[in-house]
Image 1 (cartoon, helix red, strand yellow):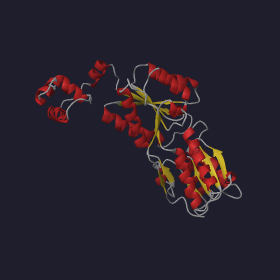
Image 2 (cartoon, one colour):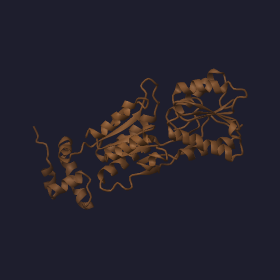
Image 3 (cartoon, helix red, strand yellow):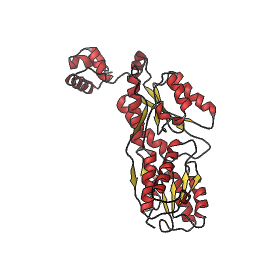
Image 4 (cartoon, one colour):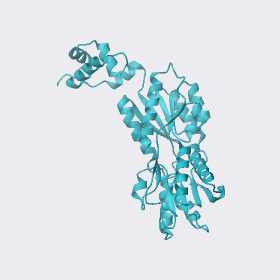
Length: 346
């Protein structure tokens, strides 16, 4: 059996000390680029593989990050939102030498909040990423900060962002742009299917949309709001209600793509032509927005980029625990209004 190369073999081939090889493998600073390149060439030439378990035991670090999704197992899952975040986070973890472990928790169960805190206390993870609505749970965020446990929030609102770093899009601005687009298209009556009450970023989308309507000189009464839960079923049921109003709204705005897909289903079942009879919009630009008919006008939220950026921020916080002063505040990534065939001028 061929003997596996060791770190000493790498050091000998690169002509450097064993500690220098270790610094390069751990992406530590204070190593010259030419030395770093020689070590990496030696690693590749020898086919050296890091003994991950031994490294973790020696460093006292698990090199594991927890990503917590808010999920009610009795309700259908969001079709892509969680997966998009996970894909971006997993890619960033692979690049940075970390392992991502996902957990689900039900916001309706107080014991699940306690379980998130136990994740931090277990020593199994170096940090955690919280998604909505946990990312807006200021009490939970503060309890993790008290433990001096690194964390990053996804799409947190203004209040939670005062207590920890958050990454997402400017939901309010996105709502404004969507509203401005529909108003320019000549729409003057709207049904708006909102997200859950505790989902602050969804509320900001609605707030922005209402501002665009007001800025256009329209009365707030032209927008009738229905409370949804981001599921396809909610889109089906609530849109059937809205499309039965007389007069029927000319545009049906949904706070995510799953509910918009449900709205399309209801409209088709009622024999309506889209967008001739009613325009329908979504939010997130998940894959479902392109495979339904007609394809949805929506707001592109770069979920993979958000997941990756959250990991980068978290790893930066982990590696700089001595300086946590700047580890708060919201970081916005760009969004884009995507115009497709589900909307038309009135």
